[in-house]
Length: 270
Image (cartoon, rainbow, N blue to C red; front, top):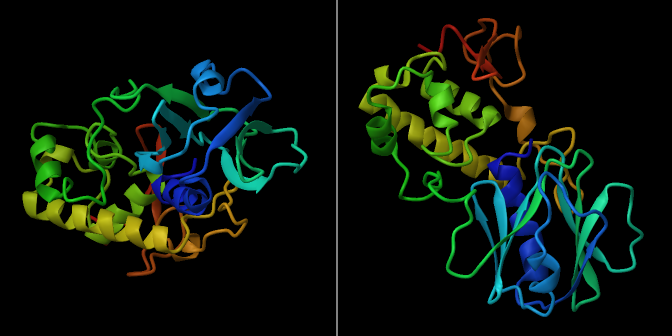
């Protein structure tokens, strides 16, 4: 599944082509993705100028005066800006047509993505009550430490909870915990304030670096310009079960936490 850096990479790739441009039409080749596509997408979005392309968690927001289109890439989604006459493929489900004779095309083979609508002044239910963005001043070690008090859940599961902090997915949670030297199995409530300060700093550093490198290349993800990211070559633990730790040489272990594979070094992480 595309994680926060991939979504932010997509936002940065499409924003210059969309912001300030008028939507002249919307082509829906199916009525639903993960959920039904609301009628406002075809009734309210055409004719509007896209004032901003923003990201909240893993959602992309196309803001207009009439409301905001919410896009989620799901497990296999991809957005690209293409000439309007580009023939659609089998999995090209949505075209948002622009006044520039280009389209923002949503491709989603598995159809786990979403295209939804948020009315002006409202917050969509999927965005209501979620935690702070990890790359803002609203997120730090103190936030993690306060929310962790009394929690017995594994710290990796804890930092992947969108109510705690948004967008820290499986890959980057594993990498940040390794960089902070914290065993992902440790109970969230048993991690010290000092160690949470280090963990928050590593989450910020690793996400920012991954964004600068174009995100992690996953099987189903390509950046909007068609170029894959390269951060995957620098992962320390994720996907390296049984391989030697790059730091100490111990075999990387794999454990299931919250129904997700979690990779860690038994020597470097305590």
